[in-house]
Length: 116
Image (cartoon, rainbow, N blue to C red; front, side, top):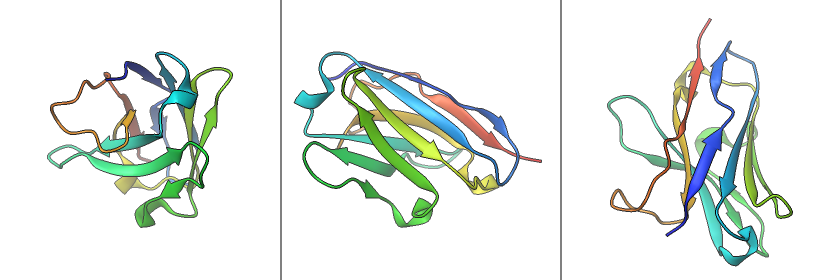
């Protein structure tokens, strides 16, 4: 299992932007796929975007055109650039290996609040 530290969340107005970072323990290149997830209050955790080693990233339809995922392999960091944020994007955002379950080892996450 991977150990991660997420950061970059905060309070932002609708239409604003945030850049989330996920520092991964060990070389990022050794992970086939890393995913940003989010969990809104009272809801299940859901996938947002996935970075694949050697393949195009995948972004879920709910955030397509607004969110971009990328990797800084020199810094072992997975980045989620979030633009044109909406109130429904409010959630705690987590980073983990793709396909992780609730029993996986999770970081503390970073809280994103979109509100005017």
